[in-house]
Length: 310
Image 1 (cartoon, rainbow, N blue to C red):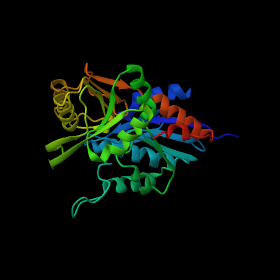
Image 2 (image 1 turned 90 degrees about the vertical axis):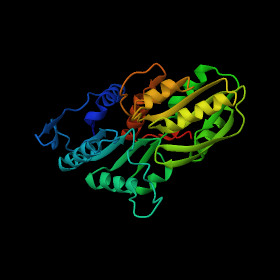
Image 3 (image 1 turned 135 degrees about the horizontal axis):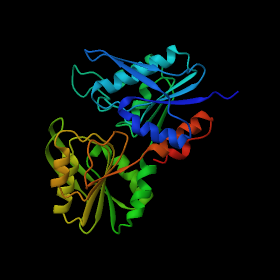
């Protein structure tokens, strides 16, 4: 007899989880969160999960409550005798701490990986990790999806001539080259120097953008400082238009104001993190169909290699 599948949502990803469950063609599972007056909370599954394949959907962006929700729900599923427990993290938080870049700092991404496995996850599904090598922090299978399967059809629909793909920093050059390969376009790279986290002291452009329609490609946008500075620089160098595609829209601080004031024509993101507000320059594409298809294929033991196109 086939193991049944059930989908549950952490509170921060409820709307996305409902959309995924709808695509999966099953009802979203019932979870109740009890809260104490001091802020402590306790999730409980309001239906049996014994012997089932459980998918728990939740992005782990700050605050740390989002991560704690995921850990508690994984533990609850393990203690309720679920047969398979898959942590579905559309956005894997703390991923920027993937190495020791100075003395006496943690490797946060490694710690999160161990916490997820200790809590009970038997499989991880995530999308556009900040660094591909984070997959190696896990001992359990990791399905690392690429949002290019969402973005490429949209880029093609724009029918832009003289298209150039750009990376806002040296670290994203591999991603930019992958997009340019599929779009058969040129590539330019921005070189930036940081004063400290989220503060850029200097930026230079490697390549020519004069008379080009430029699309910046990045895995996440936080304060939008890098993207907006890169967009302004490219317009100064003669670009016809500048757009950006970023998988994860953290958009913290005054990011929306920076986007509004910048030369960016459009910022295209996914709903891996729930949008805080709507903005005329920000277009949100749903990642629900991608996750639903992959989760279905995982459940029915079918190939998901077509979603690894980069």
